[in-house]
Length: 259
Image (cartoon, rainbow, N blue to C red; front, side):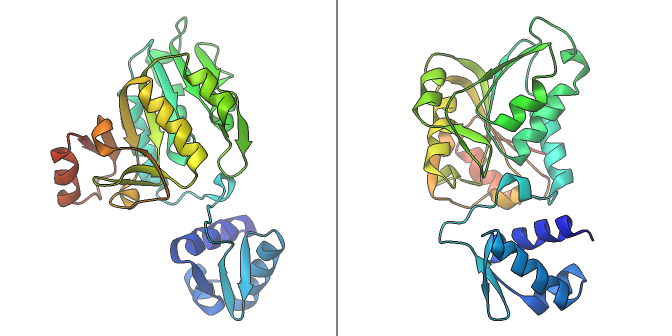
């Protein structure tokens, strides 16, 4: 396993559990304890974690793993979800894409659709995610609208009043939300309130709203609410979602697509 792959795996485990011991991490990643100690020390130097006696804890009270360190965990699920979301979009529509790993996969799935290979435009994509805009800007058949704003290094998303100004002037056919949590009672949510505010605006200016989230994010809540479950038309998730969760979302008026 390469150093980058180890770091990504360690950071994801840390975000998931809050604390990691050296011996525990070494066993899970099948490397030596000395390697894990060195990784922890180097990540601590970059302020990605806090070293403790015998292990490490997450950096700060409200920790969010930067997008560049998010690995391909649930990668196959996210790719299936992305293709299913892309299939919900009709040629010529205006699509809003928030930031995140799953919505980045949605952008890639849209770019690969043969029926969107030409047009004037084949699709209008509105996004506040710098990485998504960068990937799609090379496709001349796509009209890319990038909001203004201040970039968040964790997610590459533009936030703030400059982004508000653009979104308040446009309408979209569909807004695709990447979320960190989606619950029937607490709705869709993000870690950061500024991101949540931009995502909320996208929802308000879209004809329909799609949440793209793997099943690990369902039934959870996060700090900053984006919208109520009732505001979401469709949830696209993976086949690991349990029947009770599907039933609850369905009763709340959310159509569920499990792939």
